[in-house]
Length: 425
Ligand code: GLU
Image (cartoon, rainbow, N blue to C red):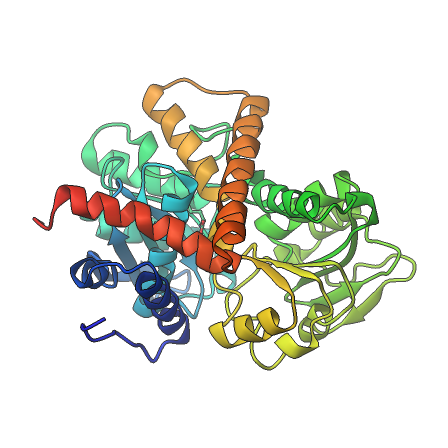
């Protein structure tokens, strides 16, 4: 490769650039295509003034990055978190490009968010912030240009506010402009559980390749939000024993298994829906770091990025790591896991159920006709299995790790689209 490589002081962006360059080099991608793909097409930063309940005005910073529209309108979530910044959005937007490409759905990748701790806001402040953010990114979003969705700390309510704000600004209904809306309001039945269903489908497919009966498998799921809860729930209903769960209040381990339905019901009774105070016989409370190092067959990180690092990769006691969250493993940790024989199913394959569910919602919104939950889940399940097989077989026949295999398959489709269209605009 003769072109200079981009690097970043932001670790997630730097990791994603390193993963991309390594795969691009391995597949012999042309320099011009590498250069185009290593830069986002469009990034914006917006200021969001909000009148707070105490009468003061606070200005939050919001972002939207569109990494690629080579294969279709860009697609990706919006997160509310104090760590959100432009570099993080760029890294996560490129991951969405690979995710949508690999999934075989007609989208490119984007990501956005607001740097804020949403738990400090009242409902009124949260609504005002979300609507003003929507209005400020309005010029660049649209059902054929860029389609936001939920991500960390956002959900159906925020998506309805965004859809309603854009619809009012444009003077017409814009239901397909965001996905992840409640199923009662232009959303899709099954979308809420889609990411978790997709992760658990990958885990069960993986067990098949290893000839392991799910009833003899144990799992620890880190993160008890939308992804982690449904992942754990679907695994449990397939017979897998969930020995550990975790949220911001710590890790909860029980060698005899945790009743996920009971734990989910418990969180609904607690402010901010945490596991604080959850108990059952034999349950041990520990730190969020310790839970990752407990004995299990499958470890599935389903919270934030950068939790599996060179510091703890040596200590993991799992056979398989299946990434439900985006970017949970650093490249240094990847090398250690590889040496230790821990098989990794990469994020943009394992958690693609969310955006596949979003795609189904968009299709229904554009058609104005809605599916049953059974149809949604059946189609999601089939596509996840097909995508898992695609990566598994590529990895097997080319003797590369699954992350590299997934990158190679995903990059190839985007590169072909760029080559076909050329470089105009
Ligand atoms: N936030 C989810 C993800 O990272 C879903 C994105 C979408 O549905 O557009 O995959």
